[in-house]
Image 1 (cartoon, rainbow, N blue to C red):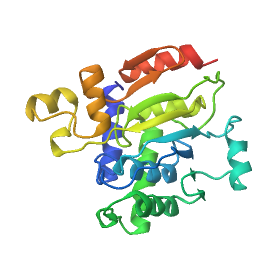
Image 2: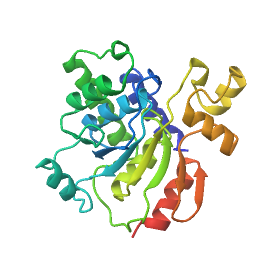
Image 3: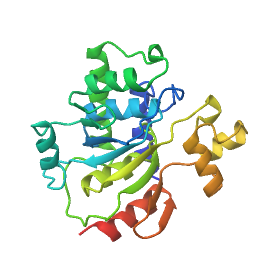
Length: 257
């Protein structure tokens, strides 16, 4: 896990966002047959808005990190959309290419929510203000960046990460994946019920509710015996692991230069 001071900063940032990107709000909408693709910068508050909606819709997505100075996916994104601007969403199910966080969020809700009215947002100025303040806190005081590229080796297959957007323990891992320009399948693991709220030790002792409240959470329980994020799977090496710091060390050792 992150250090306690860092985790508290990330928790505060999540509180400022009203814990958007924590709960699954709609699981009954249609699921895309072909995986969505998101050209993304972890540190960008605009990208965060989109990732929040992806968590709330319980959608998987292939994240293609595009940090500042990156050479792996930024030019590819420009070739597709005509400019290096992020987030950029590609939905091959509907032949949709979209910039602008608000447009992408509205598109995802319209296309993949069964009840779009559940997705109420703050007025745009207030929404953006909370995004920027939360991001400033995390990246000024939280010990992670996720903004600038670092040299790395490209894996043959994308990594797989179980995470949800507002998880304070997943933030550092997603930031490192972005910095190293490592593509990964984000298997959103948002909370399905209020009994899922809280760290695993606290949650499981207090609520004693079922752990498999969403398909991804059920998979974790069945295959690992617990529900906790982040959980990384690397099919290139056969490694699967919990715990933020262990994952960070693994990524640096395996793919960092």
